[in-house]
Length: 65
Image (cartoon, rainbow, N blue to C red; front, side, top):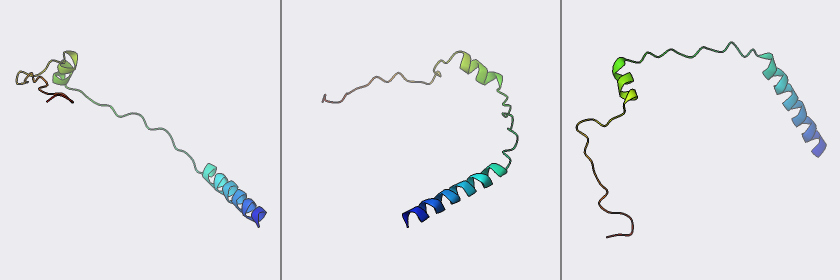
């Protein structure tokens, strides 16, 4: 009985492999083009915080009251 199950599994796996290789994979799609505005380019060039940013220091830490 064990051999029958093994042979059936092998036949099923082989059949699925044959079917899967029969389908075409298709052509790869080119990557989409993204346009970036000048404002974002400037921000990426100098990543400074905005004028409304607050310098918050850590008041407490773990283990201290």
